Length: 335
View 1: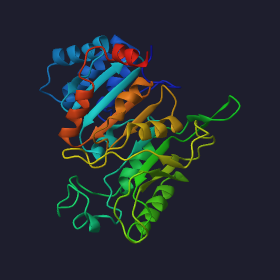
View 2 (view 1 turned 135 degrees about the horizontal axis):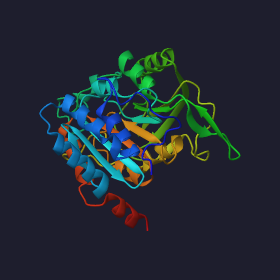
View 3 (view 1 turned 90 degrees about the horizontal axis):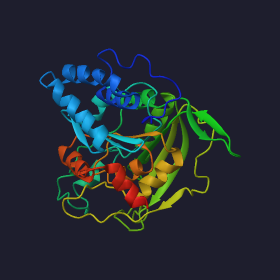
View 4 (view 1 turned 180 degrees about the vertical axis):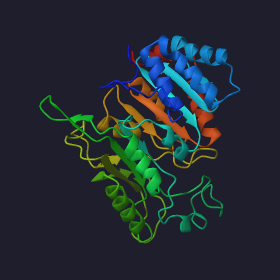
């Protein structure tokens, strides 16, 4: 059974220094043991001190036993039934450079944006800032990062064509941004304009209703985020969930000590993912944070590529998959 849905062979992706460890792992496990040698060779170039026998054992254990295994420094792989997870600890900007073009169906992510909000984080009442700003680095998506996202998104993804038919168009990019305010709106407009200049098509925004009020006094107390919907070129079809409203009500998670500040409800993430992908599609989150939704996405047949620069959150995601036979565990949960 193939692990990654492809409508065309991925010729040439197994050679050259530009191929990523993600592509090698996904290709090899989807094509069978005869291609595992490409993983060994790549990892030995990528991490020269890694023993070939160790890499072989880890990949086979992940494939045969259905658990999460480290296949290289900072790179983890798991297979559950027909679905896969590639978890990477690293800088998104570096990971994007190594991914194969047109290899991802949807990117659903919450970048660690500034977008005019930094001025409020040191003096606002949201905890655990304590006058020090966010507990994670803030930076806005630049031209190079958006350009890389456009490059890795598929240009012939399947979309809903109505009446049982399908259409083909660009892969989806869903970006969480702050609500439009006096300090943020110019930054958000610039982001949309830049994305369209790079080839994205902007379709509009969804509203995430937190159901809990936050702070904010310019235009009422805030209880929402905007989610910008782009595709890499035209979509030529419709969302898979035609009954989804443009206001999504999911109660924001309580901000406890030690919890990721930007963690999203699993139900919200899955509603978004199910609207832009089908089972067998590849979904990426390049700023995944805590990523509790990953288990649910994999259990619903999505292949997930998850990246975060913080070792702490990668470790916690690994803990979510630290059990034998993930495919059996998911099957039991669905029964």
